[in-house]
Image (cartoon, rainbow, N blue to C red; front, top):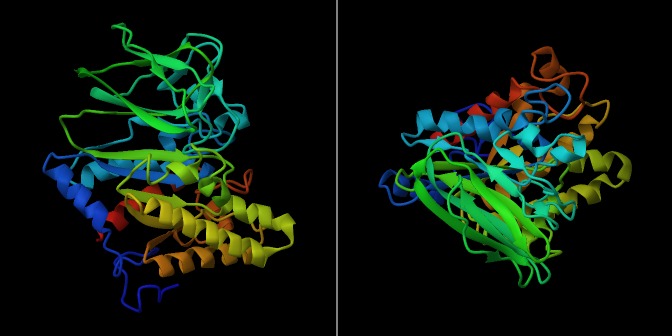
Length: 384
């Protein structure tokens, strides 16, 4: 893959395309943030490897949010960009619930009152939405730094209900209706700067589905890093247009970022083990990844990443190499940068020997691997 940039040496190992990819929208966003005009938003799309699985516990999602590469990346960017960066947001429940872990165990900043639970309807940015159809208890989010603004992303449909918001123990807002044509919308809640808890409560009608809450200090423009890892997802999940609020209808349009970092393919590889149609699978993956890139480009630049390597006892090296080549091919066609997580650790076996992985799990890294990939992303952004 060393010839990706046309033979000119790349500035860092395992980063390809820097010489031909200048990330113009991201550079403009950073410039505007430096002038105090707007936040610069980076959204990290992926599966459980982006969600941080095994990052804090060697067997599950407990504490994994803080150990995920997007969370770690925010601290690196704070030190290298000249701007503050934060990950004061949650997106879906990362599919932690599918492994028997609550969203609060995954991300302690999010606490669910009675009858709030993940809605296993379809995969959306960051996993399933959090919904409530029977009670008026709170879905609470407590950022760890002072903020004055909350953006709430919620689902709409013809039979959905209404919700209210409340900052700390303050006044309860007028209801916001989520009834309407299927889609996704955003509500902004403003308050005074401080350490706050935002409470969201279903107030009436049908189900209320909340997909995300993003918190920030509106007076201090910064880099907002959104971790959207959703365990078990394949490229098909990220381009679905099955409903008005499906990923293919909201990414790059309703949900806008200045830079999208996409690391997908591991679950496609796993599915190809039993399909017996590798060539067709890779062709479908290539088409879906291209569609996702096109959708993301509506609002921002895109960086692609190769997944952390899988155990060859579970997924052959031939399958992994075919998908890795497809990622590089999409990048070359679309003029994108590629970050090679596999090249960073060499192989699953070598990663285990170096302390980055475990023989217990054939698909995920351990905690030491996530900062290494976050460093790679930070270097890539800094190399333009």
